[in-house]
Length: 192
Image (tube, rainbow, N blue to C red):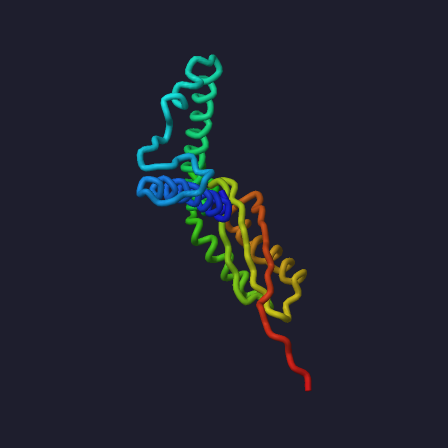
């Protein structure tokens, strides 16, 4: 789950809980609340007897309640599993030719790719992240380009250089890569 979506969902949930909790607390302390607020005094209850028993005899009520709660539990479990999932590949499985295989640390391959990408002309900074499965990694490369850099040449050099070397040395059939190019922020030059 992308970090932005996670933050937005947590922020909205927090705001709703804070607003409802603050309103209930304000009502319980005897403070004035807006006229549309469902609770209007210290002795008011959250659910009256009539509200609690209104739908009890309807045949559709309990299946709907159970279905809504089940969906909420499944969404909560999905969110929890998304938080626990690793966003980086810890290791890459290599074919050593003996049928056993070997393991390469994902961070080591990321570091080598980033160092080789930094040697390209016009690259100020390189960041590499491996994702995917152990036997089928994917790379995400973020390059910060200097003002004089040619993006087409840089991308070609990255593809034919660092990515090809990494793929060949790790014995991978393919290494799908997403490359993001950004330019260094710089001020305008003055001409006199």
